[in-house]
Length: 227
Image 1 (cartoon, one colour):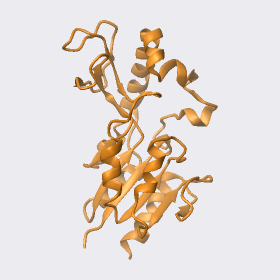
Image 2 (cartoon, helix red, strand yellow; image 1 turned 120 degrees about the horizontal axis):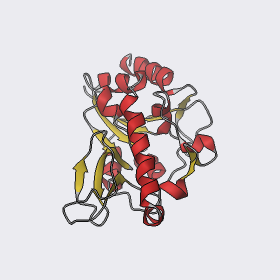
Image 3 (cartoon, rainbow, N blue to C red; image 1 turned 90 degrees about the vertical axis):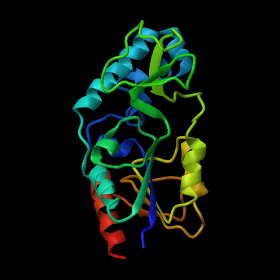
């Protein structure tokens, strides 16, 4: 019988593909404070800097490749229902082969209107330039949920977590809210596994695999399929 595996992923899974994380660098992301590049106030203050920052991240993403953890989670879809809920803004899950992916914090390969969040455009790996406008004639901005903004996909993600038969958490410290609160939506009898080489917080009843994403996902998938 197919089980519904819900996977919560964070920056740690993408780090193995060479994409940097700001929490590993003292609150800096590629030497930028998140308050200079990841808030609405930052965009209002210096659009050029913010656009340049995300254009650089998009170029970096274009040359990155899905790693074994992405591919193993995609392959699991051949035998079970798998839904990925990711805090990451990259497209490595999709390129790795996963077909059901919810992005809590937006997508780097899309742009949106700076005045109407409903106006979203596929961007691919192209730059957003000053003067690139939405249908309302206003500047385009990255399709990213910045600090201080609501997480529009949070309720949909919570609803999915409640339907999980197994919950797998990969590459996230479970310290960023409201996304970290999703783990508390799972039913009480659902097995929870956390893959983290460090000391994960917030899930006292979880089984912990203290390995990196690729090695840890391989171990979990092998045991899961052997049940």
